[in-house]
Image 1 (spheres, rainbow, N blue to C red):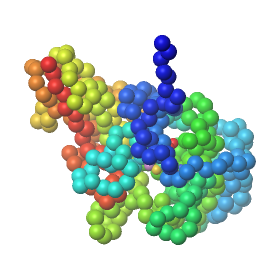
Image 2: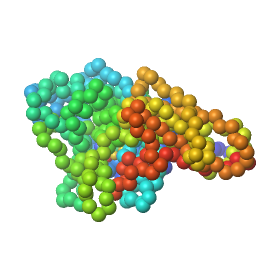
Image 3: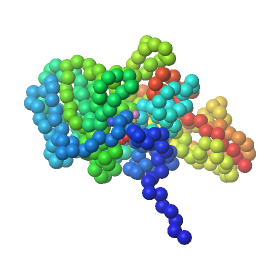
Image 4: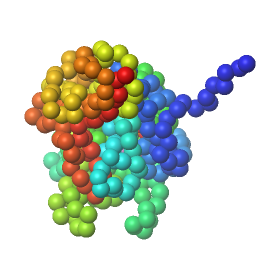
Length: 354
Ligand SMILES: Nc1nc2c(c(=O)[nH]1)N[C@H]1C(S)=C(S)[C@@H](COP(=O)(O)O)O[C@H]1N2
Ligand SMILES: [Mo]
């Protein structure tokens, strides 16, 4: 009898139109997430690709406007970075009280090997006027919104310093191949250390501006709103919070061995992971896990392992907690906010040992 092969990889569907699908967490143990298991986050239907997509105009507060073409960009000096792309809404489903929005669990994150040219190189060719304050990255996909009239392109801006950062890339390859269409082919922005919303797919043009950009994806979405009924304390979502995940054993699994390897990943948008602690008694005692870090790829996820000698049969609550070199530690409770961004509470699983 033939084995029926799946025709599509098994992502975890949150929505099909626009397509929003999670990576099954099993694939996050790989150094890079296989491309077909990379999560997908889209605000609109996929754009239509035309010849125009192979040209990238740079306009605005610059000395010399230039239209770069794809072929030119492929020939420029390039950079390769391994880094996690994490949606700001990852783990939103765990906020209490619940918040509206895609109910992402653990898989709105994937780690890719990205190749591209620096934005800074392109801007060194156009030159910058000293009025330059932000760089706007406009995409081809667009659609309507429920809260405003008109059609909007997905558009985000970066402060000029972040745009000029030596690792902010206009990427054209993911995991050694041209970026797949659903991930932004032919050209997408990659902003290390920031949540995924900054990494604009299907780039249409760059505009350098002398003021603060205000578009719905900058000024309405992707802000932390601490209160349910007013906008006080609104702050933009930028750097990824320190976070971790237990990948093995799985939540609510039944274990037989008295010696268990507990392993997972930890990541941060500020500095590097300096410590991961594991508790097997619900948070009373903590032990350091062994960290495996790729020193040549400082943004990439840290893999960690802890060998647990299980004292006796029973039910256990296992918790992982990461710290980074900026002194940030995962909290027991994530900072609640109305749109459900930046969830990074300690990671907790339950297991039974028989
Ligand atoms: N053009 C465009 N770029 C975009 C988005 C989008 O909807 N349109 N979504 C953003 C968000 S919120 C995330 S988390 C990442 C997801 O990238 P991926 O679909 O390649 O995983 O892309 C970002 N870039
Ligand atoms: Mo996102």
